[in-house]
Image (cartoon, rainbow over all chains, first blue to last red; front, side):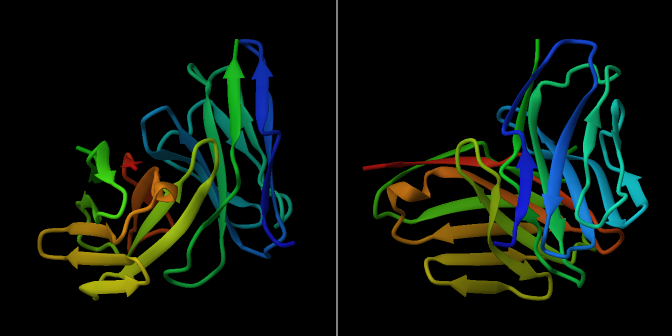
Length: 113
Length: 111
């Protein structure tokens, strides 16, 4: 089935460790996005990529890094520089064209202890 | 202030209509979206409207857009318990490829 897959669903890490969240899509979408969601709040854009080997910072990129070596994959690394990493992380992808909708993964809940 | 704003909470009785409101600030927004999020899950697109439209209806959902006031609303007719969720409005700006989301409205449907 076509879709966008995030793994793992739950992730626990010790403070000070880097951690990488996976996002894979087989929808052949060019654009991919990472959002962060905190309890009771909306989604804030971390990074986005419109094409392979290219990505741009979103509104809250500090403490995060991404890569886009393959069209299907857009992993997000939460580094030790991110001061408050515990959150729900959502990945999305979007086909080309104006007005096309973004398809979301099921999210990864990261807890740093 | 925030680019996209929504009220935090809405309580409605089963069978009644729900109206969720959203305001945005960017007059160059091209498309406006409504997404639904159930607990612990990703976002599911419900409907969207192009900025040159005033209204769009899709089964139980009606979207109204007042471009002059930059106000968007989502009406859910005959609200069911399965409609309990968080609803997000989002705008796509003319420049760039970003979707900007509101803070979400939590809708609670009471039997």
